[in-house]
Amino acid sequence: MRKDIITNMNLCKYCHKGVAIENSHIIPASIYEWLKETSPTNYIRSTHEPNSRRQDGIKAPLLCSSCENIFSKSEEIFKKNFFNKIANYRKPCPETIKITPDIIKCIYIIAWRTLASTYYYPIVDNDYTHEEMDKFPEFLKKIKQEIDSEKYCNYRTHVIPCTEEIIAKLKLPQVERHIYERSITSEPRIWDSWERFIIYIQIPFCIIIFEIVPNTDDAWLGTQIEGLDHLVLPRIMSCPNYIGQLIQYYYEAFLKSKKTCQKRKKQIFKKAWKVPIKIVARLKQ
Ligand SMILES: [Zn+2]
Image (cartoon, rainbow, N blue to C red; front, top):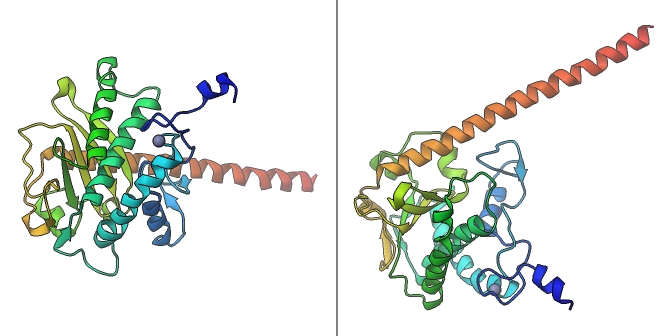
């Protein structure tokens, strides 16, 4: 192969050996599948763009097929033994959910993918300073070490299953239920002067916070999964105030984009009316 082709090719951001494939998902594809299967229209509607139909989520060339293959095993177990129990329209969420290393691994992989895609494929006007972005490779390396060693002792991950009881107990915003049941979002959120740096992951019926730079004043109780055999829902007692603020923020973004879409629809409707009037006028001549 020509040398210039090799240098231009996207190398896997995880192993730096294989060629990154185009369809790497941030959130496992099976979760988008669930969204499709449980939707009356069989389409995915993004929370932020309710009228643009996304068939299978956000994709970025991050990983090679060999890394994807290795990770897919943990992602399958996460879907079957964790997600399917929490996101279920037929059975209520159990009070106790078994936490295995594969479930933790899958969440670390989502956190790594989210941070890596923000670093390697930044949006033009994102809010990060150069000083902040410069630290991302170090965080990525450390999260990778946790995934490879399967020890999970240097970071904290908090899980909030979004049952009605937990939403009420944690005093989370009483927004429309579909915000809790059908949103898929994953992005890093940073506070000034490294007060806090987290990956905010929202999947149907569940909010997950991966703390990269934790704030020791944050009042988490009963949510952390590292070192746990079981997540016991009645033991979930509190979460920091910023969780409610983030839910509100995403909800308002949803309302705003819904309004823009309705406006656009109205304009299209108006245009559609103009055409037949002209035709009628021409016919009369
Ligand atoms: Zn790889």
